[in-house]
Image (cartoon, rainbow, N blue to C red; front, side, top):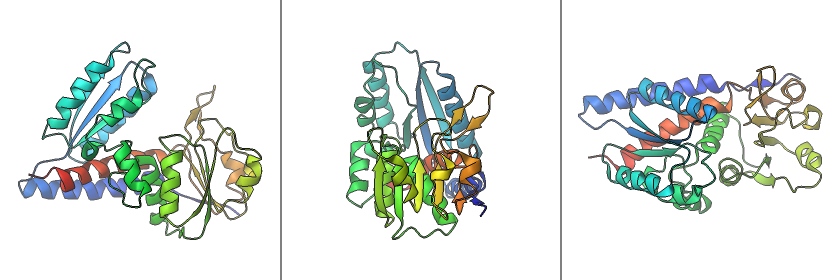
Length: 285
């Protein structure tokens, strides 16, 4: 068996083209263009790269975007003051905090200060709670992007046993809620889970987000399963790999995402979707 590769770049391009069409129509109709504010703290190189990618993506679909870069030693009050102003700014539809933040900053305090209708990352307790109550508003980008990938490939999720490896607030926890909403019987594993291999072997749909290169062995994977690899890891030789042993896993899975070119582009595309949604649903004037 050789797995079908789920091409995140291809799907993301289709999504962005659709967004561009909608933005062009908004311009033609005399409506405001969507606006995204990005806040970056410190000089973390990967974070800067991610922000730059998002700025380019915004430009490609006709969004207005602006970025604020604070020094690493910034205090919470300065960030909170900026967020307060952005919450009131009618040209801004989405506010994004590039994570991780320095130790002196409480991320939940910062994320909770964003108006829920501008929380395009989907991390505000209100938006997480709405998803939990089966009434999603703005949804976390990576989990929502994964669900979109599955739909594009016409993969039916109802009744599947889904195993989420990793329980972070960014991916694992919101992903588990998305999987429940998609009709899966869902298992969440984490660093305290015993017999991880046995959980993985029983997964019809496997999603891995632990941030460790080739952490999950290919021979653990059930034949015919669907494997979604969220991890992005750089090896000493510079090669980018995921959390899953791709070569061996792809000989057993029915579908698999590559790294790079799988989940990553979908996360950015979903951020754009969320920003447009926030503009259309909550801020049109």
